Length: 81
Image (cartoon, rainbow, N blue to C red; front, top):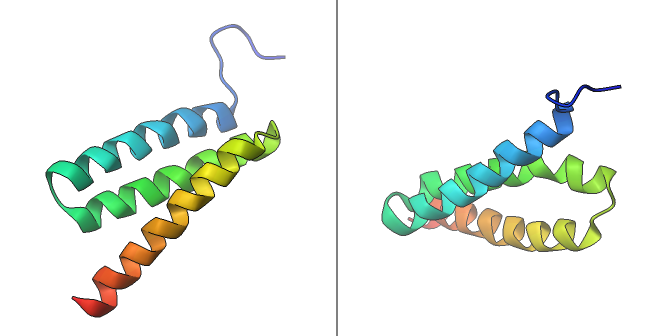
């Protein structure tokens, strides 16, 4: 059993993933699109296991939709610029 101040690994990954998702969006808006897309995609990957464990299918669907857009942008950056 976890004490009040300990957090399971998946919970920590969710927090870090959400922070990276938001930070990546800011980087896309105010700086480097390529770096922002990588940050957002990594944030998505960190938070998916938590959402899967607690069966938040709506969050998995929304994050998957964003991940598809990010992968499409990565392909565009890597191969067509």
